[in-house]
Image (tube, rainbow, N blue to C red; front, side):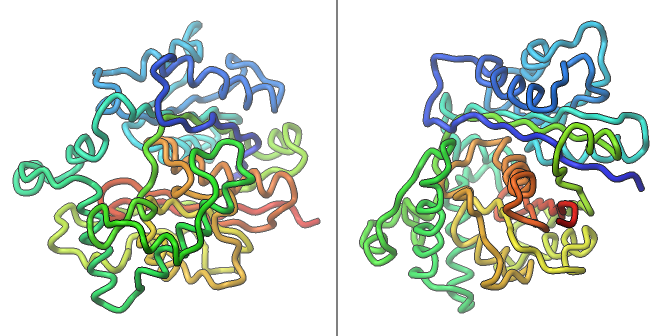
Length: 353
């Protein structure tokens, strides 16, 4: 296969509300940021792929507005996934592997602020047996967390430690929405939101956008001093029905990691897309991440979680760490759906120094 790398990454700040700007106005500075980083114009990109959700915007085919902002005339090679941008990156990666393009622009964005996000996400559920009950996303995550506690897989203090570590790490991230944290003991004094989850166990709701540029072979080396080579990437899905799954495990994550080659050599850094603190516990076990791995140095989902962009941000943050020499081999993970239903794992490496 061809060598393909992430050569540029950019993101907007995540904010609780962005009523004063449209999706296009939120996205355009990010697109300019990544294209300027590699000194390319949109018309010089071989393939463009985006990720977003019409449910967030409340308009069918809303992604076409953003595409107009990118510049779709003269006609370009373009695709869109109704999914987190991490899956758009996967499609672009496959496109470059086939040799149909040498460069790709991948972007994603989401504005959750106009609606009630926990209820909007019920549209992901089984439409016949589960969605009519209107179980919101936080309640479903609480079911998963309680199952993990009951199985002895964690305790509430460990969950508070996950939240405190992420939000403390985010103090160095200018794009984070929530930074700084009280110590775990103080967090445990907060009331439950949905038992056993407290506010700090849940991701903040925010609006944001992200973009990356991919390039193959010598083109990647020309565009970036230290490309983040994608050594493997795979995504898998759990059964749709929550009742037939063991919510304390994530076999799809482990299978995706195996297929991506994550266990062939140790990683020194991991960016995990774990919207709820209990989900990080599950992912760490499935990915065999020990204490020697720097976990979510960007702060992760507890610090910022723009829907449809949070997964792409995890890949971008891992790639950026390789670009600046802070990592040699990084693991990136993205998820979508309730209780870690769909999972993507990528292995990124920098050239030997």
